[in-house]
Length: 290
Image 1 (tube, rainbow, N blue to C red):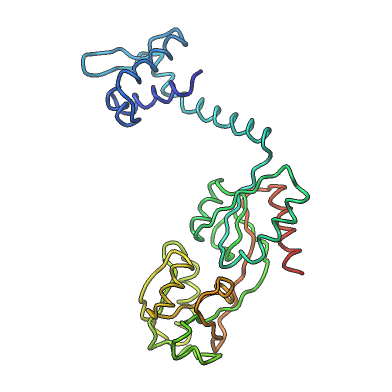
Image 2 (cartoon, one colour):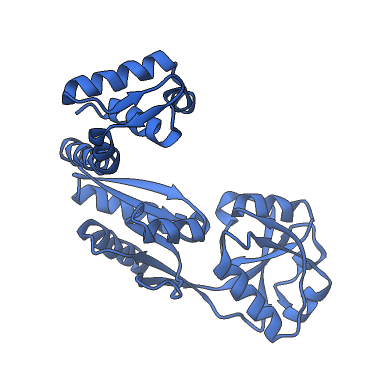
């Protein structure tokens, strides 16, 4: 069955009219009508009873409208299997560059030397995006801050990363090696986005609250690059993982915090057993042990 024609038919069912479906699919009405007519000829049945301004499903049309989405899903699965057979297994990995970029590359290099039939697709995502995609099957593995609140995920710790206060090189605090948390009362604080990094907000908020600091939030950012630019611009200071940006050559200075917050646990997470993912996790552990 031609899936293009089937998709056009299902769009017409959803829209209630062929004209409305054609508009949604960015097709001309005659083009979509020809596709549906071709599908009817292929099946040997009428799918619609056509009126002057609307279409009504025939009994055969109702059956196809109900089962059609399953056929499309099966077709997509068959195409993916054929692609995998032709190009090799696809391993989908989400990661946070500021946390895993410095060791993930070496682990992938070692992994690819042995498992040449596995293609790795990397996605730079926020923590929430990673965990959402892991839960619904769009990712096979993530490397990020361990989040044990999600039921059904398993974690393999890779390293403990200390927190640091990051300031611009010209900031008065940049001359110091260590800053007491109580001194942050007067500093505008820059944070990663609450929606995208809920575990970050929880950890930072808990640390500041434990030491009686009510932060003055000066901005939220969707990633380290944008946050670092704001720090450089002297908009505020930020709490980040140690060495999150030094390798980028940015004009930042990283200071120890006193008392020290609980370290960040960077871990590999997965939902379903996957041989390729587990092998990559072993390579990640070996790299961290070097």
